[in-house]
Amino acid sequence: MSEYIIDAIKTGVVETLEMTAFSSILAYIVGLPLGILLYATAKGRVLANRPVNFLLGLVVNVSRSLPFLILLVLIIPFTRLVTGTSIGTTASIVPLTVGAIPIVARMVESSLSEVSPGIIEAAASMGASPIYIIIHFVLPEATPSLFLGAAINVATILGYSAMAGVIGGGGLGALALQYGYYRYQEDVLWTTVTILILMVMFIQAGGNLISKKSRK
Image 1 (cartoon, rainbow, N blue to C red):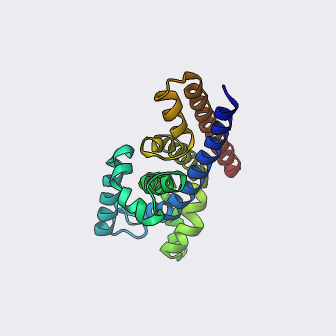
Image 2: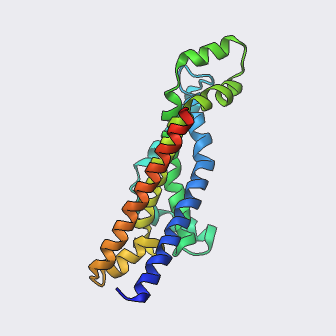
């Protein structure tokens, strides 16, 4: 493997980490509140509101049902509007974020739903407001599960970042496609795949560790 390829792989790792980190942060900025709303407005919850819950659930379900490669193509005009281009590392952050938001929202909703109803009832009996219950009772109780879900979500975004190479995105996905597929350089292909697998394993292990510590 030439020095040029090694440098390209190093650059690909940095670009992949950059795309994953920024997309994860942006996805949680939108997805976390959305997931809380999905949970809180469901039937029997502290802010039960059927029309709002139905509308939010519909948007999330439709968004989640779109295969990521199709989403990449569909929002190219929006990506260009936001970043001024549809190719490269920065441009890839837009579809990665859009694709991850509904996944984050459902994962957050699922984590919050694991909280025992007894805790919520006890808080309500003490006169706590719905917002206070969510912030001071539901979220702290769901923290370990939220960390586990975050690890899964970040790993998913990492996988999506590899697919972004199909439309000119940067990172290891573009490198694997350009050298491993088009030029039949199997050593580059397997190296990038191995690095991606190791990155996913590291993220998952980190999420498990943080979750265990938060339980204590």
